[in-house]
Image: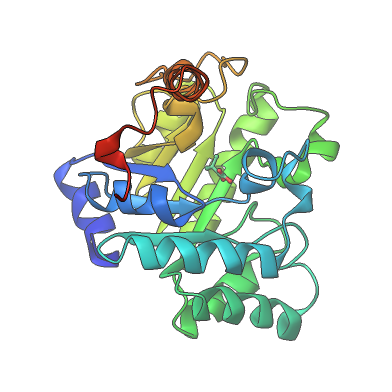
Amino acid sequence: MKIQDFKTHKQSGRKISMVTCYDHWSAQIINSSNVDVILVGDSLAMVMHGHPTTLAATVPLMALHTAAVVKGAPDKFVIADLPFMSYRKGLSENMNAMEELMRAGAQALKLEGAKGNLELIRHAVDSGVPIQGHLGLTPQSIHQLGGFKVQGRSPQEYSDLVVQAQQLEEAGCFSVVLECVPTPLAETISSKLSIPTIGIGAGLDTDGQVLVLQDMLGMNPKFKPKFLRTYLDGFEMLKNSLNEYHNDVTAQQFPTEKESYL
Ligand code: KIV
């Protein structure tokens, strides 16, 4: 998948699949799959580092994970998240953050919200940095939003988000993530934009879907939002494998002669 394919897929109606990835060995698996796009999301602060929100992600941390992913998935289009505050500090510092993530190997960057970001997006795009927008539930604003909940339900919020999506396209974004918004709102935005929308908790009418890898693989059985479909009982499978190994060791069934240097 190349940057141009985002538009051609939108035009042809071919849906785009995206998953998050934060590490080298998962990246190798995704690289051998048919999934179109990898997002090194700032959700890594929660999934990989155990923080309660994404606010703990920093540019150096994002760059470290991005470099690991890019090396494992050389055939995939890799987008990296600009973390909390890294693009709200004035043009020069914002561009330094972008430079660090692009030099780590990202092919595009994602940032949250339209308000106050449009000038930066134009500058980034003019500087050769493709930008993906992100609207709806924007986790970096979790304390402003008052929790992880569906956005755009009131008529005011609804029309606000439509306008912001159009502003992101006009500013030069190649795509927009829509997170946790009602299906009719995602449908309206998707029909008004000529760039693809990628949904998570946004219904079937977006131009693509994104899920957090560990969520779709069932690695966190306690996390069961309405929008999530799990494709594997990963937590149980891994736990059972570990228990099998433990049993083999304690029963002196591992290693055998075949697994030893004689
Ligand atoms: O950080 C992330 O994982 C994301 C996706 C949920 C879109 O931004």
